[in-house]
Amino acid sequence: MVSERPKHAEIADDLRDLITRGMLAPGDPLPPEHELCDTYGASRGTVRRALAALAGEGLVTNGQGRARHVRHDRRLTFHASSSESRAALEERRARGIDAWVADVEAHGGHPSQQITITIEQPPAEIAELLQLPAGDLAAARRRLRLIDGHPHNLNTSWYPRWIAEGTPIMQPADVPQGVSVLLADLRHAQTRYVDKVTARMPDPDETRRLRIGSGVPVMVHTRTGYAGDDPVRVAVTVWPADRAQIVFELPA
Amino acid sequence: MVSERPKHAEIADDLRDLITRGMLAPGDPLPPEHELCDTYGASRGTVRRALAALAGEGLVTNGQGRARHVRHDRRLTFHASSSESRAALEERRARGIDAWVADVEAHGGHPSQQITITIEQPPAEIAELLQLPAGDLAAARRRLRLIDGHPHNLNTSWYPRWIAEGTPIMQPADVPQGVSVLLADLRHAQTRYVDKVTARMPDPDETRRLRIGSGVPVMVHTRTGYAGDDPVRVAVTVWPADRAQIVFELPA
DNA sequence: GAGTGGTCTAGACCACGTC
DNA sequence: ACGTGGTCTAGACCACTCA
Image (cartoon, rainbow over all chains, first blue to last red; front, side, top):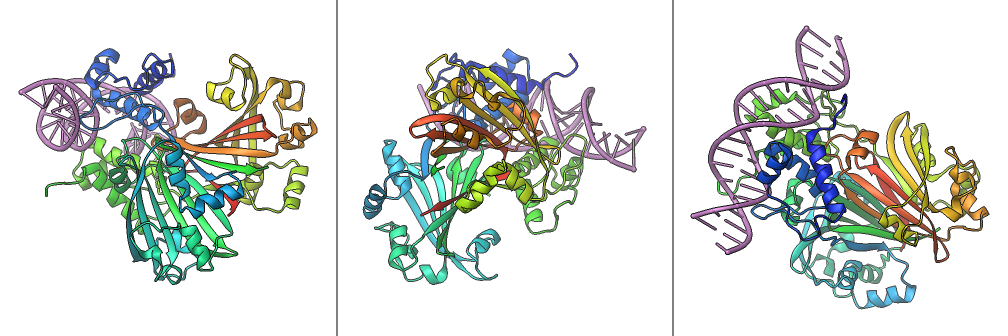
């Protein structure tokens, strides 16, 4: 055998097979690490490396003090661009239900959020998207969004100061009619979006606030809303990859 | 100090700061691991864990035998849904330039691809999207797409057999006029797409074929093309997260 | 061949959850 | 109190790259 796979990869493959073939069903606990060490004749570090890979693929849970379990697929489908009819969309907006809340409720969960508002200098990337001169401040509306009380994603919306100041956007509470309607009332109705999707490993702050298991990546969804050619809002949503998928419905 | 951050996180934070503040510029080599061990008074495992996090965030390169370097941002922007005019789109399609090739050339790179064709039983998820009865076979057209000779992404398109068989789709070569035009000629013109984006850690096969650095996640972009209500194609693209971002341009 | 990162081991101690 | 996973150490050997 000239080119053997690394041992941690072999272990991961084996466990992955057990899961995908149903020998280990969703909800089942995995054997404890020391037992896997015996089974595979590997040290704990090697076993943990294999388990980290499975966690990163979203197949197993992990958390200090708790046994690992095969994960139920509980990914929330978030509709970033829906084919719902114009009328249904207007109706939903009129009730002040944003797209995330609608998706969570369709999924049978109970959404909530914690809001903090700041005025600060935006990161360079945000300033560029908002076409703000260097050094200009922007309003940041940060929402930690939870489902059934558990942290689910982080949403930060950035607005130029002159748009947000003196409006309900600056209140750390729900905007009753929703921000899209509010912007329209303020004569900044968004006419088009540019959505950018990337992925990376979470930074330590995200890991802590979203309680992300080690090895699980995040998707970063950045939506820039334009009123004509003027950017009026940049919304950055950080989705742990094991909890969400983003769907766009598009005409050909 | 009651709640101290883990040491690997402190090290990662420190190095991240050096990079984002420009003390370490793109292209600069990082100090070797043993030197970082001395600097931070940590063991090699701990230092490596910090470095893996930075690699996962796309900040540094890694590869056996080579020093780590601060990464240039060389992310390709892939336009999954563009606001290019109807006419420009038709013109591009007429030349048989698919969206990926157009984006690579706009970026100044030279695209190429390696194609393999199989007829096989599709994974359950694909069969469901294509609305195929259990056990039915499908045509798989796998493309390893390269930029300037370096692997960049993996694209697998699945077609129901009755659509693909006996057409140029089954040839392991470029489809001169592009698959979209071909499908239209075959009276299966796609009228709408449903795009799904998720992220996860790469599996071992992807790691090998795409030469993905350890700790770097992938985005998985699944496009289902419908002719009316009938799915005619499922295209799954695997993008290493440090090499690509996906952009959707949308009406509000 | 020297230097780099990739893999692995065998131990240790700590933090958390459950009983 | 016990068992779990989370962190860390100090060593070892191997595979690769580059001068």
